Amino acid sequence: MKADLIYHEKRIEGNEVVEIKIWSVSKSQDKPHGYKYSLVHIREGKRIVGYDNAEGKGDHRHYGDIEESYRFEGLDKGLFRSKLCF
Image (tube, rainbow, N blue to C red; front, side):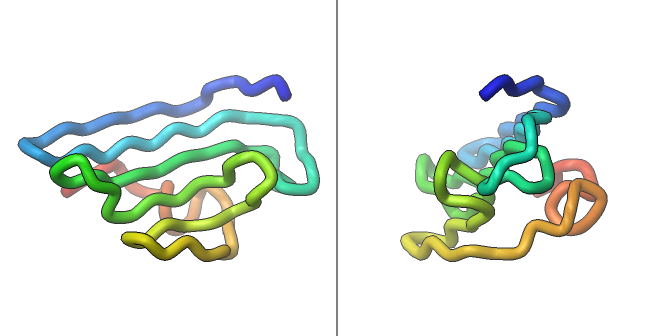
């Protein structure tokens, strides 16, 4: 799958890291919106929360040790609407 990076931002403050990556991809069954993305918040080397649509898994989130599906509503809503902040 060809992916074109359209956004990348990473912030590091002390022992915390927040990173967003968004690629434009061809629409597919697991990426019907045409985006591949990853958003993660790491504290002291451990993922606190993360959102992504890894190959074959579709849109899902990680919260601690829990992984569950969620409804992606587009880049202009929710997760990707504002700049990164702690």
